[in-house]
Image: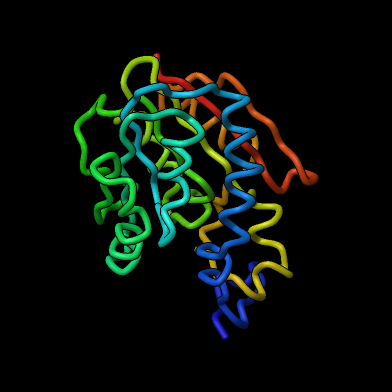
Length: 209
């Protein structure tokens, strides 16, 4: 059993990976989340984009090309095994995709490198998620867009989810308002946000001036 801070429910079985890399998760991401983000923020035709936390399937990279119309999709993940698996999963996309090991709080790219940055449920896994937002803003070109789908503190720190999924317990999980505020503090302009499931899930698009 993994115990966090006293005010955070305990984790008994950490089954996070079973969901993150599942076929069902990929289906939800494609049919639900990507569709919402495209409606809120539009496409990125021919653009160079970055996905934070690719996971093993590389679904977000594939969606960047097939749903958002990007010309090239780069991705980073902190785990070498995930990077290797993601490269294999996206091998059919050839040179249009590149996956590297990296930290979302210190993206290995120059400022203004990307037309869009995608973050599918990455922030609530980060111990310093506001730093992730700042990094996304840093690597965006003027006019570039930050696309985020996120489970909020209401769900992440709920007793049922905590029982089967371990997440950092730093008392600063994203909330819908908190995510929007973090974007503004990073110099981004929130152009659209949609929150569902009684505040447990939020989608946001913000642009860099």
